[in-house]
Image (cartoon, rainbow, N blue to C red; front, side, top):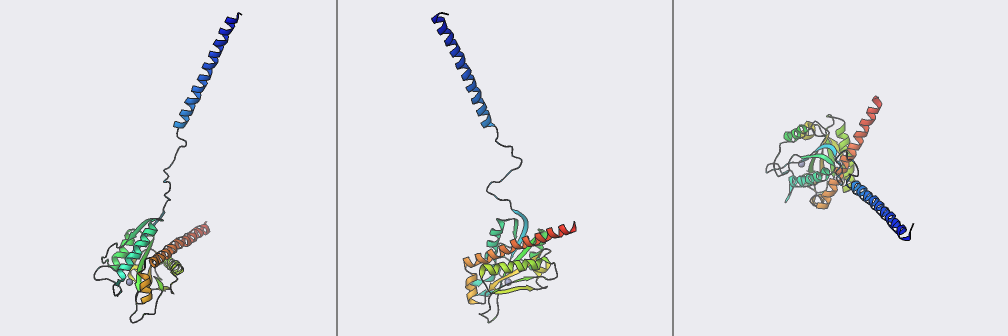
Length: 249
Ligand code: ZN
């Protein structure tokens, strides 16, 4: 082979090599582009990132009194119906972050009859009913504290609910613990067909406690206590249900 021929053959071989490399490069590029376009995983269900799934419960909150004819206790410019609603609205906002349905028996300054409040909870098939009130005594500026009322004959859960709420509300507020109390005569706890209780969040007749109850931060502590009580109530009763199911097997 002449030197010239040899050079030409060498050039041809080089060109072939170049084409080969180019083809491989094209194949690699196509492969990469195709892989990038492909979905990285096959989603089987919709996941709401950053939005935790809520617990499937219906909780009815009942701000006591309301309207011109039912102001509750009144001391100077402090009205029970207004504080009941303020606390209830805060509780509603907190519970809505955790539970699927939170229903108020009133959201404005209107009177809702006691039977109607219970009817709302029954109609909505609620899991829990919590009524918010404040106490008062005549000619007594000394008595203060929190108590939770429940109906002793309706079911066994209402007492557990009252206990959990009372315990937790005392923890967060540090208020005087007046304990849980039984009554068969309270319409809202009697006529509701689910575990229920009525929280007397303090005495408006006590100047000291009245000032606390009107305070935004103190209201937050009350709400925190009721919220924690509801949470621990569900934990306690659901554990019991599971245990009972286990025993039946
Ligand atoms: Zn009241």
